[in-house]
Image 1 (cartoon, helix red, strand yellow):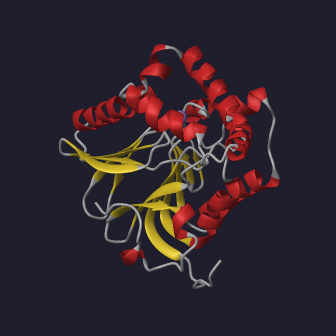
Image 2 (cartoon, rainbow, N blue to C red):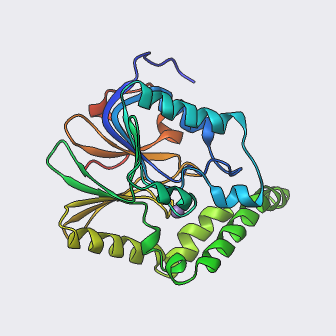
Length: 268
Ligand SMILES: [Mn+2]
């Protein structure tokens, strides 16, 4: 990895979600690298931070997952305001709505005031997921199928290599093809934007579908901060209130630019 400047990138706000600590697929090491390279006034944890569903099935908690929690709590101790908006995989924390532990607060949803005068509704988004909404047991079954497919992926690719076929990500195939085929992502984004409009905000930030995005939906700026299982992405707000997506898989390979010159993601 190339030499980088020692000083961390200074940001106003960082939004991360779908870390899935406690699940084998979590990219904890990359997230630690990212967290060590940035400083922010406010850190939003937009749900599915700890994968309680996965831990109930299979207890998995390596040191790196512990270090993610310690790093986040360390930032809170040194003055970063941390706002945790629990998701469906860590829904048990929703019982602690309104709790304040020093600089760490838990909220069901939150309206963040951006530097550029934006009013940003922050929520996880599972309430707009028709699968979860209609049938929680189906959603849990879906989580099982996803785990099985992730585990099967290396064997499928071993087989494909034997026959000189290109590498193939089963899980991203399922997410981008199968779900798009049933208009899953589109209808999710539409319903989130619609809810934001009803609430009188101009911007909405969510996670849940592991699909990072910044786009305008009929006058509402829809932002999805992605995930730390596959895409390793975050949504960041710089000191001027400009919003960008950061893909750490790509950015960490390069010398860190100033916050005004981030080469990835879409400016909004
Ligand atoms: Mn979720």
